[in-house]
Image (tube, rainbow, N blue to C red):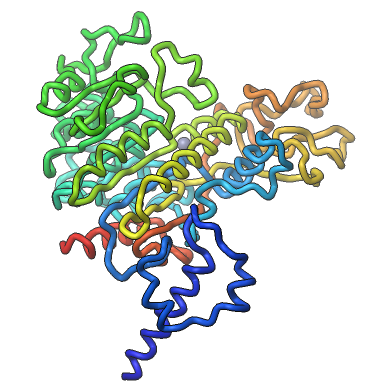
Length: 498
Ligand SMILES: [Zn+2]
């Protein structure tokens, strides 16, 4: 009896939290107002499961995981400010769509063998629930990177694999190559992230290459939706690329995996915007889109793409339209893959506009799904060394120079800087170049960095987790990155009775 009462109180408190925090699309009273006036009651508790953003005790029918590759907290802050300033405000008070999700946590991102992680080890934690070595995809750390003979017995299962085995619809969307580390985490098992096509496999390696694993996915009826870049790993050296003149596929086995996909009943393959737009989601069961020979364009550059490419938001929308036709439920992994690439080049403008496009994709998703049955999680695999420093006044251009103080050398400096990267803006004598002579707000500007390198290194601080939907409250704390994968799997199993 006492335990029952305690449970009722817990429910009531959970319900009160749900009212205070609510869903992304519901106008909410200020939290302080709720705290002052809302007395938790059994009546409220009884209504809790119906409320958007509440946490019913049932599991998740559907799961959508968004991964901002390289999207550290400072990236989210700067993107929020940039989006607000692009809309004509000062920016600091703006919110990206996923910042309005009711539950927030922190993820510890180290790899099994590295203090600062890479995307392969990180995605294994997010998808298979287990921390592993850098470079391994859904392979336990006991294996050795690049050594195919160490794979046997160390294979891990992603929750996308488990979902497909349970009869759910499955999808993966990315702006990077579909065979790149993060999207590969949905469907592949590989002792090296570099094994994207058979051309990269060592002689005698028994493991199929990553692109082949997407097409030959052995669970259920295979991956249902896969949209992104990376045609070259799916097409043979004999096939001229339809967009990049003079270039071909990479495959040495002569197979054209895109054509093999398209030959299946109910399956379509598209590689440009017009074909993508012509796809009727109500009549397409399986869709493969390979919109670039390698990575897709940055959102900023997309209008200039030769054959046209859909945005991350358009791909996410189409994927949900197709996958949600499966009445059993669906899972979808969406990667904003090029936040990371722009950061590697210290090009903050593109990193931030990629982040804003991820926010757009999440916003569209929240309009489409029912948070009473769909668990939505937004996180990053790792961070990048972007800092927001100086004492710029409120509303100062986030891409500009700090407007109140200079360095000790009397010269201005940018609000955004990186720990490492290609450009330090130093004269031969080691003194700094005067940045007042340079337009630091230009989309192509390379932000200054401390340590010289051909590209920026990842950073190892915690990244944020934002969540809504069934069992999303489980993400309301600091946790190891593998816990995210295990919580998602558990939410799926609870609903689907596995
Ligand atoms: Zn990276």
